[in-house]
Each structure stands twice: as structure tokens, then as C-alpha cells.
Length: 187
Ligand SMILES: CC(C)(COP(=O)(O)OP(=O)(O)OC[C@H]1O[C@@H](n2cnc3c(N)ncnc32)[C@H](O)[C@@H]1OP(=O)(O)O)[C@@H](O)C(=O)NCCC(=O)NCCS
Image (tube, rainbow, N blue to C red):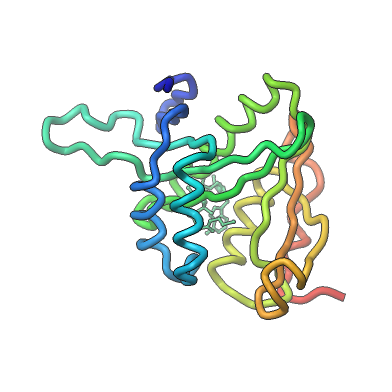
């Protein structure tokens, strides 16, 4: 088991190499608008015992005695093929949203994948044909990181929860391609 601080940046310390199902469980409970299905939540906690795990802490966490924040974000990854990987789970404590933790977690995963020759990264999320304010923001997040929509499927999670597959070609800039696909309806 490794505990490697190799993704430090000015604001976030992202570490990997250690399972952390407790943090996954804690963050699931803080995000009921996104993760409200008990069986799915239990499956995420179980997956956290096995899947490659990245956790984010404030870079200065622990500087002050007794004020340690601990992990505020976690990402679980799957490697399907040498060329292709998936973000299986990603969550940031809502008290820390929009402060760069999610971006730092994905950047750390991408750096490892690129170094290992991986070319494609996917993530599945709720599709735009079902209006949901929280997941609309989630899609904005992924769009800003360079993910693009591949397909919306009704068979994966059932017709009431359309599954949007987002993909990113690794090693490319997030700037190209625009963010005009994150609409509430599709033709
Ligand atoms: C999605 C999530 C992981 C993003 O993490 P985060 O730390 O809040 O996001 P970041 O601060 O790293 O945002 C990076 C960029 O994404 C975009 N973004 C993030 N949140 C956004 C929002 N609410 N509205 C618009 N754009 C947003 C912005 O471009 C942002 O960069 P900027 O702040 O410099 O403009 C987090 O909001 C979360 O846990 N959401 C609930 C659970 C979830 O949706 N998980 C993913 C399921 S597939």
C-alpha cells in the first residue's frame, strides 16, 4: 500500500494509493440531491474498498493543531482497457464546492493515466433530457474539464434516469469544443 503525495498544487493535496470507503460513505451522506438511492450508495462504498482511490485535502490541512479538515473530495477510477478508463465515482463536500478540489482530483487521475499510456477517459452521469439543477452543474463541471457528450442511454439506469456518457481524449486541452451541449432537452 502506497501513500504518495505526488499531485500537490498550491491549493489542494491529492493523494492516491490507499482505500478510503469511510470518506466515500461520508460524502455520499452529504450529497443526497445527487446520491439518493441507498442500494447505489452501498455499492459505491463497496467499490471504494477495491478501486484506485484519489482523495483531496486542502494543501495546508493540519497546519494548525486541532484544525485538521481531512479529505473533502474523493474519486474512484476504473481501468477498462489499456487505452480506456472511467471515473466511477467523484464527490466533493458541498461546503467546499467550486474551490478547485474536483478539478484537482481529475487532473491527478489524468496525469497518472497519461503517464501509463491511457488515451480515453469516460464518466457516466445523469443526462440532460431529465431536468435536474444539481446535475446540470455537474455537467458544466465536466464540460469545463474538456469532457464531451457521446450518447444518452435509457437502458443503463432505466428510463427515469437517463445515463449520459461523457468522454475525454487525454492529453488534449480542455479549451476546444465549447460548452454548448449541456442543454435540458435533446432533439
Ligand atoms: C461535480 C463536483 C465533483 C465538482 O467539484 P468542485 O470542486 O465543486 O469543482 P471545481 O471547483 O473543481 O470546478 C472546476 C470548474 O468546473 C466548473 N464548475 C464547477 N462547478 C460549477 C457550477 N456550479 N456552475 C458552473 N460551473 C461549474 C467551473 O468551470 C469550475 O472552474 P472555475 O470555478 O474556475 O470557473 C462537485 O460539485 C460535486 O461533488 N458535485 C456533487 C456530486 C457529483 O455531481 N458528482 C459527480 C457525479 S458523475
